[in-house]
Amino acid sequence: MVPLSVLDLSPVATGALPSDALRDSVAVAQACDALGYARFWLAEHHNMANVAASAPEVLIAHIAAVTSRIRVGAGGIMLPNHNPLRVVEIFRTLEALHPGRIDLGLGRAPGTDPVTAAALQRDPVKDPNQRLLELFAFDQGTFPESHPFHQIRPMPTDVRLPATWMLGSSLGGAELAASFGLRYAFAGHFAMRNAHAALGFYRKHFSPSSSLARSYAMLAVTVICGEDDAHAEQLAAPVRLSVVRIRTGRRAPIPTLEEALAYAYSPDEQAIVDEFLRGAIIGGPERVRAGLERLADESGADEIILSSLIPYRRERIAHYERVARVAGLSGAA
Image (cartoon, rainbow, N blue to C red; front, side, top):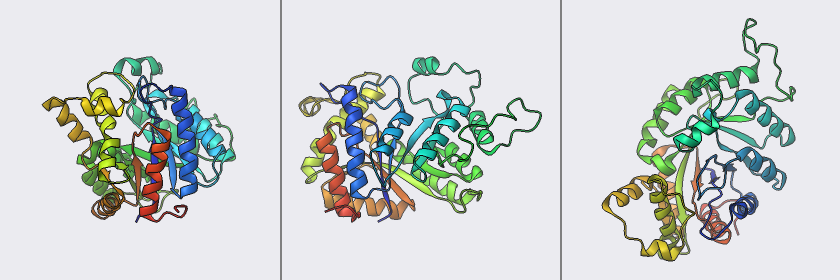
């Protein structure tokens, strides 16, 4: 089995407080640290009633402080929403405080709807690729002497950015990761249709860099591991309905099991679910083990990162415990 990691969105259940969802993510991270997962990433989303993770850099700082081994990172920081200099300053600071344990994943989408994106993006630089180039120029000190930013030295100056990843759900992200010699994380948890082409392109066109000698690709996948197959389908039912609501603009917390099981999907809604969960691994421990092994073999991914959207702390931790046991992770009982 390749290394396994966790992508967490701080999912918000019906009747729960978003602040509780953030505290749940901290508890889940501590459990994953003990279980032997490689890294714990926090995503950036805005104006979503079912996702509380809007400030991953804050969560990263806190979670890194209350865990001891696991790498903690952003999956990701969405470039359209951020000033490149501030990203360098924040993640250098995190790397200084937790050396060797921080990851910076960079995405080119806003992680929200167009109106919220407009509220976030007041900077005149609109092109995320330009922001990426500026970020690297600040970190590496490569602005030409004629550039007005040439003499800016992001603090702390004695560290560089931590391990940097390009995120993507299409060939665009793969092309950037390959050309810059970055690690690459593909969003197969909602775009598995494009995974094999993107990972193949990345490996074929990868150019070594000073920070990475060979390509390294991580594939995200939705995984829900129940006590058995029937229990897994129950855990997945609220996730399915939540996906439909997200994709159709109906903002709401993740529904209860009872509401999800009673919901009648239209053909269009069922198509949304099927496409979003293409490649998802949902089942009891043995089905999940076999699915993960098959995915690693077929994709050639160097690492797999699991997304679940299970909104309840105990259920989410139990899910990761079951996966850890079948995967033989170091901390699994």
